[in-house]
Length: 145
Image (cartoon, rainbow, N blue to C red):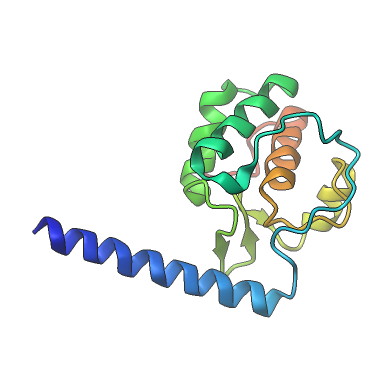
């Protein structure tokens, strides 16, 4: 029974990876392009590409800078529900990244919050833009909040 559960998890993970790669290819955006940002590189130096633990550390660091309702605990819960902390998470309805930012609104949001021309698949940009949005306006855009 446990072996069957592990097999199911592997199949689901493979399917999600394939759908993400397909979405990235269809979308045409680069998942982790690092361009200049108005946010200093020395701020929150955690490398989101090193896994969930680092993604969570980056979220906590961002919340220390831009306080949000519910604090880091709430921010981590929302990220878990939205993407499972996967920077390349993609929803066919057009939502991308850790906080499932809308493809339609991402370019403007990224510019507004200091990450012009960055991909929503870039974990650093997605987290910091999302946390700044919540700092300014609350968790309203996230139905899982």
